[in-house]
Every structure is written in C-alpha cells, then in structure tokens.
Image (cartoon, rainbow, N blue to C red; front, side, top):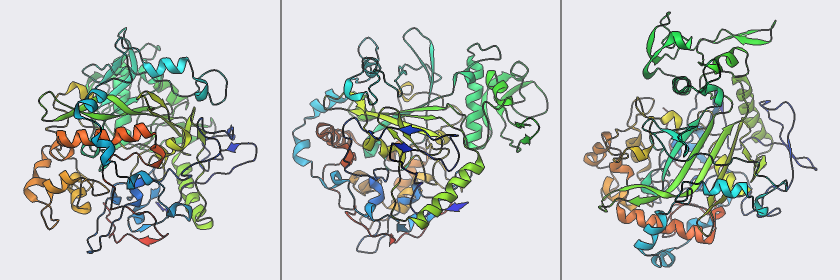
Length: 570
C-alpha cells in the first residue's frame, strides 16, 4: 500500500493540445483534445485547482485547543485495488504553492439579505417544479441536447458528444427505470447510507443514485434481454465491490450455467458467494483463464474471451452511474422532508477503461514520485465540458447544473473539476465510487420515491471495525458538517461544553433520519441560500449552501501546516 503526500497524477501537456499519457496504461495511444476546453471561457479560470474541495480548507483546531476531525471521512487507509493510502492527510494541510489560497470565496459571503427576499411559498413553488421532465414525461435536457445550442457544441460538429440523459426516473418496486412505453432503460436505483457530512440532507441536499451495466450484462446466452440475468450480474458486481456474500432471490443455477453459491453443484441458489481465487494467465493463448467468480448470460462468454474482465474492487468496463442532487421538499404536514422534484445537478460517470491491480499500483507509486519531484505542479485533468473529464484511472465524469432560469445546462470545465478530485486519488473510494459500496442490504434495490418513510427507521451503518459510523463522525468532528455551521445538529447532539449527548446519539442507532433530516425551517433556509448561488451562477466560487459567512474555514494555509488532528485509522 502506498502513502501519498498531497498531489494527484500530473499529466503532460503538448503544444498542439492536451495529451493523456496514463501511468496505468489505460490507453494504448494518447488521446488529443483541443486546447479549447470550456464553452464559457477558454483562457481564464478562477481556480485552476478546483478539484480540491472547499471542505479541505476547514479549520480543524480552535483557539481553545479543541480539535475537529472531519478529514477521516475521505483520507483513510485504503484497500486494494485502491493503493492511495492517505490517512496522513488528516494530520496536515499538504497543499502546493498555488492551492494555499482558498479560492472558494462564496464561503465568506453573507447571503442574509438575498435569502430574506425569497419567501417560503416562493422557494417551495420553485423546488416543486420538475426541471428534468415536462408534464408529458419528455426529458427536457435530452431534447435540448438533440437540438444543440451553438454555445454547447464545443467542437462545432453539430451534435452532442457527451452523455445524453436517458433515464426517466420512473421506477418500479425493484428500482428498475422504465421509459413511457414500459421498456427497461437499464438504469436501476438503489438505497444507500449517505456519505458522511456534506451529503446528509441536513446540510443542504437530497439525492439519489442509479447504476447501469452494459447491455451484455442484461442479456442471456442468446442475446435476449433477461431481467434475471441482469439482477444476478448486478449482485455479482455488488459482491465483488463489497467483497462479501450477497443474498439474492432464488435462481436456477443450471439455467444460468454458473455455480453462484460455489457449493460444487448447479442447483437452486439464493446467494452469490464471494470466493476469489486469482485467475491464471496463459501465455500460449494470451488469455486470462480459471475465473473463480463469473458473470452470467452473454457477459460470461465475453469474460471467457477476456473482452470483459473481473476482479474484486473493480466494476466492469462500461459501468455507468447517474446521481441527481436535489433541493429539499417538505411534506404536506410540514413535519418532515423529502426529495424535491427539482434537480440542482445531474452527475454522470462511466468506466471507459480497465486498469489491472498492477497498473493502479504503478499509478499510485508514480503519484508519490511526482509529488516529491514537483511539489508545486498542479494536476492536469484531461477532457472538456462536452465529453466530460477523465480521472486518469479509467473513468469519465460530467455533470449538468441549473442555469439562471433553473433549467439544466452542461457544467463547464472548471465546474466539472469539482467532481474529479473526490472521485480520484483519495483513500475512501472503491474504483472511483462512494455510494454503491454503501448500498443497503439485503433489500436495497429501490428508489427513495417508493418508500414514503425515506431514511426513517434505517439503522446506523457500521465501520469496518464495528463502530457506529455516524456516531464516530459526531465524536471526532464535534459537529454535523465539515464547517461546523449546522446549528441544529450542534444543539441537538452536543451540550454546552461540546460533549456528545449520549441519549441523543443512541437514537441514531435505529433511525439515522434523527440525525440526517433537517427541520422544515432549516430545509427552506438551505434551499433559499442555494437559490442565491443559482441566480449568481457563481458555482466556481463554491456551491455550499449557507446564509452567514463561514468562520471555521481558512482563507489561506501554509503547506505542511499541522491540523492538530491525531490520525484515525480503522
């Protein structure tokens, strides 16, 4: 396992364009993109290192000596094939000369007057408008991309070359999305434990996440769409990502041709057994053989031919994720919150290339060498606002965000960098992703809209060493968000001396909504605060929803400056 010390992979730039030379050899030849990388601006950026999140500038130590640690959520001892072991970043601000300055100036804005001008009825009306589908179910953004505005057409070829939204957010009881004709789109929603801090609804947003595997994973041996095959392949991927056994609805292994429970016979099975044995490379045929775990259906044949590969901790090539970030709606009784129809953002990721363990290990080692030799060199992120940005490890991400009218538009290059930093180069991710490893079991295949209770009644997730994860966050951070600006959580869970209230913390063991849900009043305030950012179109200066200026964040830090945190490892 490698230890990193701040920088991410830097890639080389040539005069004619930007060229990617992947240390992990994810591409056989360089791919050249035009220098023009942004439909809004081609020559200036507010922040050339927007991949470093605003939360990384948090003040962790108070003048009183009290230390807060929100850093352990991302910077932890990783697990192969993630070889970025960055728990040491809990202990110091390891920035380059350029990134010492916090360019997320929205953090220091006072939005009191702007928020006061928005009434409760106005903001509720706004968040309850659907900016993704019209009243007939047509996909608004998709139709606009098919009639491409000139300013979005980066290479002037008359067509959109990035992801075109094709999910209807019309889910059945098993989480499968269907189009207006009732056909499956391949997207499947799942319920999950919200990642620590920022993504808790109490800090500003609701969200949902969907996964889609390539069409070969949805087809039987004859190439016909088969829902059972798809369910089983999704369970196999879940088993590989979580590295554990996964319970499934009973299936006939004989029909599938794979011993899923690995009991030595083809019979009836209600489990995908995680039992990984390293396969064998045959130099005579230049193929990998002897897979101890296999996909089913058409994907199995393609696995045997090595068109697709398989390994713990890695998704198959072509895996896609869709993540909608939304405002917070209030129920009819004004007592609890729910997901709003209006999207703040629609985020998309796709795995384009397969990197082996050795390639990913080489990439991590090269990153350390890069940091040592060129400590002030910034990361070069390959891509553009139309095709998305690459992580350097096989994935491409792109996003859509509200314009001044509240319609979704493509994010520009700098806005999309915001996604890349967290989805590459930190210890907390599993093959670039956060949420799928946090999928609920055993019945987590559903969209939040199918459960009127939402997060209510869901028990607290546990860390790898068996501790309550959300409680641990409260204990180590002494707050409910990175900036310690969530007064509701502070008042509910901490006494006047800053000590955790045991009777309150105990309640989240069986009901995480007690911590994660804001009051109706706070939800409305956070909605209004974010709407001000939308009106300003000031995302590049920070998109964190708050009203008062944040006090617990640095405007500047020194490289190597201690955080005061005693590293947490688990």
